[in-house]
Length: 303
Ligand code: DP6
Image 1 (tube, rainbow, N blue to C red):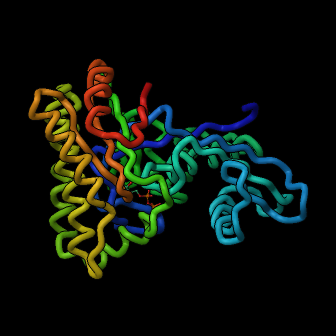
Image 2 (image 1 turned 180 degrees about the vertical axis):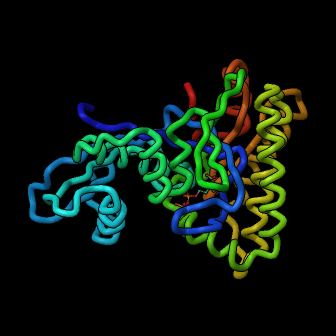
């Protein structure tokens, strides 16, 4: 696909779940993610052939609400007087299903704007811009990234070669967006304060574990952090959950395989799908075992 800019999805090992400030966007707790190189969005901007701004996802024309959302975001950093544009985006990630399509989509859009409007922004400047579109997208610019409480984004490194697969429960658009859901949790969850406290500790422990290349520790923190984040949804008012019975079945499969000696851990985001973290060297064997227990779709994310 010629002339398309590529944006990657990322999955948090320590989650961002709550904005301490909305302008500029600052997270309540520092968070860490892993980029998934084959869950991506491809975006291109062209001159619109009609006299209105247009936006297509996977060749499907988006309605005025979606177009306005995009234009409002890009107007923050593109020329005020500009001709009408057509944004064409393709997701290999199911859109808005808690598979981080907003992070890959936002990264691709920022890169495409940089290209089309010849903005000449540095990576650091684009990281700053992306964050205003979707907080978690600022981490997609690096393979392993930390987004800190002061808003800065750091590249981390780890000797381990990770793999991630998604046990797909449901690819439909989620009913409640992560933005709305996290705001409700900030405002009403009785465990929000303890979540932030735990996430801050998890961040420090995760950085240590990554440095020591201690996969067991990395996996344990990843799981317990995800569970604490999801707890804030059930303790919010009104109470809700992104997880279904099938998500719990997928989590049980991961635990069962672990008890059999497989090194694998789960995490979930604002949707029912379960992501499994493992070491790349174990991918083939683990995929074979999981496929025997999970008869639905499995996406390998880091081939
Ligand atoms: C559960 O980045 O989608 O995936 O900043 O409001 O656009 P906005 O939220 P978004 O939230 C991501 C939440 C999460 C956890 C994570 O990726 O850290």
